[in-house]
Image 1 (spheres, rainbow, N blue to C red):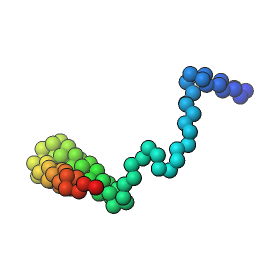
Image 2 (image 1 turned 90 degrees about the horizontal axis):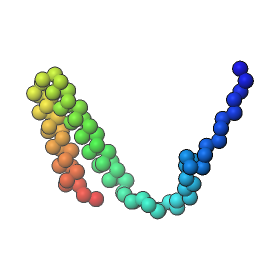
Image 3 (image 1 turned 45 degrees about the vertical axis):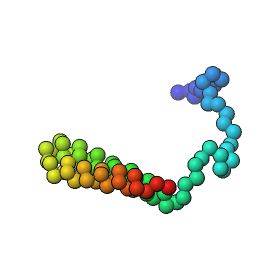
Image 4 (image 1 turned 60 degrees about the vertical axis):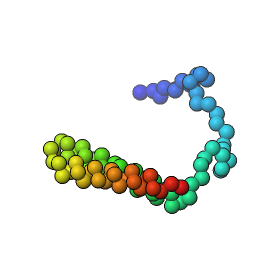
Amino acid sequence: MPHRAVPAVPAAFAAPAVPAASPGTGRVRTPRGDLGVRRSVHLLTVTAATLIAAGALLRAMWLIGIGAWVLISAFLIEMIYRP
């Protein structure tokens, strides 16, 4: 089986050339502690959604209740902790 050449991508469909950005442009600098809080809030929110969905599927009110309290704690942490 002979090797086929791949046709060139037309200029209209090619990715635009993006100049390399300097280290501080276009980015909001956040302290390292803020990233940990954001990660924990996201983890709590995903955990709450999983617990609530599992409780709804299994018709287990206790799972829905635990998921609701986890979601409330995630929102309280997000609301109280403002960088």
